[in-house]
View 1 (cartoon, rainbow, N blue to C red):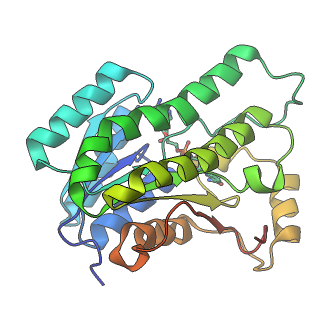
View 2: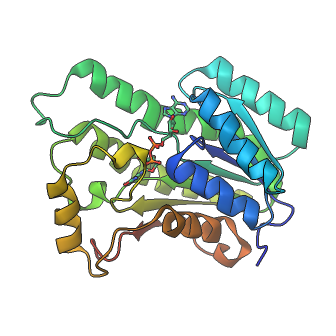
View 3: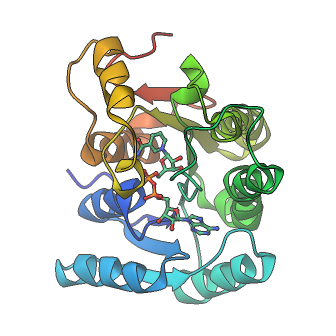
Length: 251
Ligand SMILES: NC(=O)c1ccc[n+]([C@@H]2O[C@H](COP(=O)([O-])OP(=O)(O)OC[C@H]3O[C@@H](n4cnc5c(N)ncnc54)[C@H](O)[C@@H]3O)[C@@H](O)[C@H]2O)c1
């Protein structure tokens, strides 16, 4: 089913992992996909893979903490496509953060996590706002984390940043709703990607014990939810956080 045919969608942090899976799924559902990441070489290869499969994609290097780079990204999207229908705020500092108690976290690392995960998401959404309001309907999907829902231990900076994403999703949904822009969050469970390779065995076991569906989510499971939220099927869903974690958390 090509639910995203004719739609232009930007996926941040899409060189690898969940961002790449979401970009791929959107392309398979007919969207033209704008990809960006700080991992330039990996990003070009990832975009090349989708291009070789016959999809319409474009990769641009962009650090979402740098206003000039975000401005350049949107100038290029405006010039190339003239519009933007969907934004997936996936880019985040999500790797090698776990293992430190809240009173051991380095302040510079705390600030870096918030600069990328929270302020970066706001910065990109702000840059996209006028295009999204014109899209009618516009869509925003933010990657949160289920750790903000169950209180994942030993990475307080990360889980707090993802709690902020859930709050930001609700606030943005209120402000953008009147412009026919839905804003939702996905809270993935622990999903195998490059970023979670370093997760300790006890964390995987903790998830398996707590989940009702006894397997780890795949990147495709998360991408499927993103594609749904970007599609016409989700027209009346906004301000929500969708946990894709096999029932690890129950609303
Ligand atoms: N994999 C999981 O288990 C899991 C669980 C819950 C939430 N998430 C969230 O899903 C998203 C993707 O996670 P992932 O597992 O694929 O991790 P990942 O580290 O592979 O993906 C994050 C991407 O963002 C990019 N990025 C980092 N800083 C950036 C910046 N300043 N500007 C632009 N791009 C930047 C990285 O280069 C990377 O490609 C993240 O928001 C993460 O917090 C992942």
